[in-house]
Image (cartoon, rainbow, N blue to C red):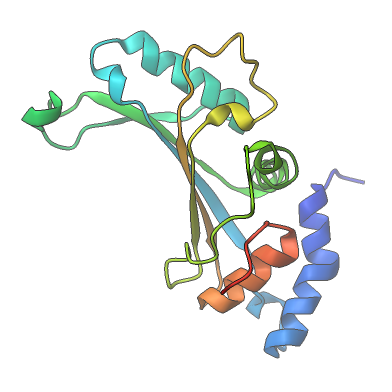
Length: 184
């Protein structure tokens, strides 16, 4: 039998059925599901030192399990001393089993390691069923060692779903175990 990520198995056995019952779907393909996870890390200090960007790419590759691509400036900004085409960050798009494994590690290992963590804000949905969150310190991931990292960096994570509304997406992510705070 082929390997199936733990969170994907939870979705297929429990969460999808709960969503179909709650929203009255007739077909399993109508139920919202994860499509992809986009991870972005801006490295502003890379404009002078390319080694800094290479180190950030290596650290993100350890966290994600795949090598991110380098993003370049689309236009020049004199105030930030950035020229068009300069490398300024890195990004990666996770799909399939890597996506499920990353989300599982994010929910069960990384988020509980944030100091004074009280849950993620429930108002970070974009109106189309996608959820975005920012992490200020990438050292919360257990794959990285404090000794190997020269500087803590932040990253943006966007969870893209096939949900038609924020309510459906919130039900999906809560069912998968994403620690969203209660709405007030």
